[in-house]
Length: 98
Image (tube, rainbow, N blue to C red; front, side):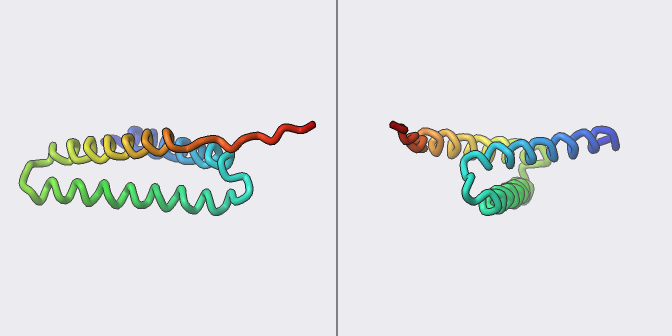
């Protein structure tokens, strides 16, 4: 991977994380710091699970391409978790002023 590609990847990751932080602040206006802490903890957990998934695939002897499939499986599981969570979340009712 060239230095330019690495720089673009790191830069885009930094932009995405910042945008997610700002978006989530709207869901926790009373505790933005706590929301940011939980978001970064979730990102760290995802990094750990991805590394473990890749290590398990390599240790099983499936070859280096198996790490891509391990990432695909973990990403799909994360998306399914996201979809089921969003389906359960109901917005709080807005009080009507008289």
